[in-house]
Amino acid sequence: MSTSSTHREGFVLVATLFVLVFAAALVTGSFMTASHEDRMSRSLSSGTEALFIADTGLQDVLGTLKAHFFQDSTMDDTVPTAHVLAPVPVEIGGDTVGEYRVTFRRLNSRLLIIVSEGRLVHRGRDNVAMRKVSAVVRLPSAELPVKAALAVAAGLSAGGNSQINGSDSGGPGCMPGDSVAGVAARDTMLIAEPNKDHIYGSPKLAQDMTLDSAKLMNLGSMSVDQLASMADITLPGGELYTGMAPVSMTVGSDQVCNTSNNMNWGDPNPANVCGDYLPIIHITGDAHLTTGIGQGILIVDGDLDLTGNMQFYGIVIVKGTLFTSGNGNHIEGTALVAGGGDLNSTSTTTGNSLVQYSNCRSRAPFKNVLRPIPLTYRNWADISAMAPVPAGW
Image (cartoon, rainbow, N blue to C red):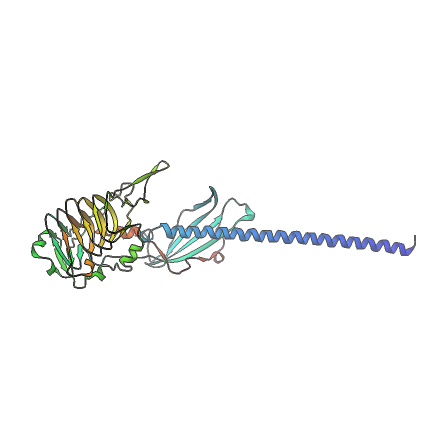
């Protein structure tokens, strides 16, 4: 064999080896690139899922927990202690895909920050993700413009065996407090002397020249119209409504309150199934009510006519005038009657109707309907990168 032939064979071997090494490098590089992109894709997908789970936790808190939950008297506003809620699993199609953990911390008496941490579960160590979102929210507050059994911006005629009583009747879990005015009015001269025999309180009558319809419709940080926009039950005006009563339904082995029934206005007995249901009922016009029971906040855009055996516990707000007749009408809490802005209008209580002041009944509805409000339009921020993954996640 010649030397040139040997050299050619050696070159072919080297070239072949180079091609094989180059091909192997391409295959290995392609595999590593594909593997890296797959991990990036799974990481992005897992992170997005965890973010959605965290946002679910935040929205659940904002949508279900009432303001009074965060205003517990055991919380010290001066000590920014974090309060951690129990983990909540998130299911899709019956399968648990993750869980969220919510923590909130008071910033001051009105503001707090809510943090929701979401993570995936049962995905293996190569598919673990945790995301954290937060929102600063304001705790809304509402207060009555005046403390009285009945507040009117116009005239009042009380007759029959009716009573308007400013003595505090107490309520569930509440001891009776100080008595307030039986009737607070813009002008007590509009209440004739014989009518005063039906009014009790300390004093019987309280005059407030600022007590016009605008003041009666102002509830501190919110208006009556804003409160009406949050109504749990909205009914048309000009109708007769009767038979309002608590309604329960069976879920599994439990009896729960059926809040989807518009004739279920709650139960004033807190021991019963609907005892913690204090809805806002908004009637968009004149209302004629008879033979029913309810609690919460009743808002009537027109006149309210109670014609017998109607019991309501909480706050009654009437933009027009109030008329009661027949037997068994009972309002326990407080009633605000604007008179339609007409100082010549007159509300009338007759029969054996009772308007009884209760500080407990008039405060409870606000605590049970107000929810925390996010301060910004975008109600959460992703703060996952601001803290390491908690131990054990």
